[in-house]
Length: 242
Image 1 (cartoon, rainbow, N blue to C red):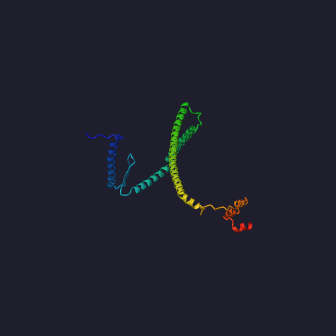
Image 2: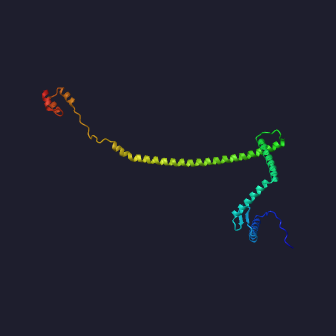
Image 3: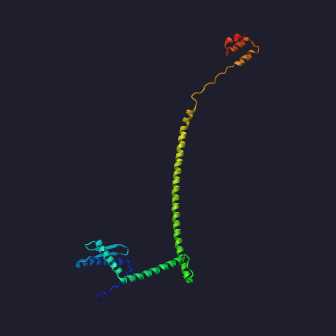
């Protein structure tokens, strides 16, 4: 019995799908090389896998040159289609379809804004309400997420500022301690400099002149008075008075 036809459908198993892709890709690149050599054709092959990885093959003429030729051919074909009257009719039909879609979108926009609601039935209004509720839920979710992100950023900034403030306070206290220590070290020297240059070791003796005259006026003996006055008054002053 011969091999039956292979059913073309997506392979569910991921490993088998990757193995099949590698085998078929190698066979496809081989066939492209064979047709380019046997038929002297310029071949460009581009393949993207499910993960978006690129696999390509081109003949001796580089890929850019082949793609440039393809762009030129496609542009010429488009110009030919535009010049065809039938294609103009197709464009008119396409324009009518696009215009109808625009009118529907504008009408829906007015409904979302709460305008032109009179022709709508109860079911249509309920559907519109559900759509608006769903949209509001998405909007609130996005708004809350932005608010949480903003609060988190502010908390991080607050923490950073608090740490900077603590560091500044610590430096300020260290400077204050250093200043107080410096002032305490310079204090005794300033007191020595502010003291007077000299001090009197003994008080000056006062002249007791008035007391001697009082004793002379009491009428005591002259010799005793002479003896007292001789301590503080010159003798010539005493002789002149007598």
